[in-house]
Length: 325
Ligand code: IPE
Ligand code: IPE
Ligand code: MG
Ligand code: MG
Image (tube, helix red, strand yellow):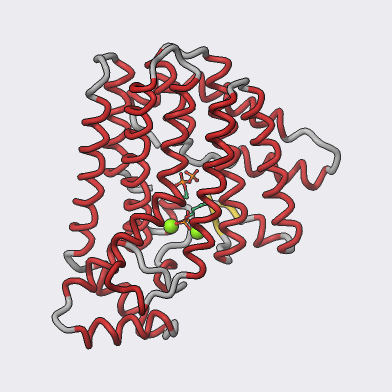
């Protein structure tokens, strides 16, 4: 993520976050050690820790506490990715082979668990009970969301598809963005209304972030995104571009037959569908919905006094909907 202002502000802080994460990987088994180092140094855009650090800097939080929380959040995020890739059977992440592509499911689950444990330890080290509580609640929300996604019956629930979609992306992504901003405010000398404003900012930005992730699954290329694309629909996962595309069809009959082929994972039909959606208006319209979330996010931010950090957060928010990785 090369959002200029946001990154310049926290570039040095992010190095401390990297260091903090690396220090958590020290342990007995050299294979696990190697896997953790590989994971933690594989880059990633570091969007969530950037959000934590910038928010905390804006609000006058203490650097050491912010770095610890940012590292906890990025480790939690990384742990969810390890499990997510196992669940999705994804072979590539951040441009490198996933743990599950090299190890057994059992070893992959345990590696994720180890990261979760270390993330929780870091969260506790920040010495803020409210932050710790929110941290663990967020993990529950994420897991609930993933389970919900796994068991959703798409055909019968089509009429509420959009609310369901928003609920799902709140759980899997926006909740952690919200927490990334909220915990920074919780350890800063501010009142509840400020915590609320930055939480709202984080939430809206997270919604936009996942919408863009879902768009990039159609429009991106594996080289730039660093993970397989076009895979959501092939796995039967209906996201915003598909929902909008379905809405644009003239008859229920058309919708039904498309949903049927998605459900039955008829590869040839689904591949054609991915093409149709990619070249349809649905992409631009989904992006407009992402923009609307960023506009809301910026409104929440503008209730706070102006500062260079606030400006950088606003730029980060816009960058998120303009990104191509
Ligand atoms: C991937 O998150 C999972 C989603 C919520 C879309 P990121 O796109 O932030 O992944 P990294 O950390 O940059 O690799
Ligand atoms: C992953 O969502 C969300 C969590 C890790 C909870 P996705 O499945 O959309 O993420 P990618 O596309 O694999 O990065
Ligand atoms: Mg995935
Ligand atoms: Mg995705």
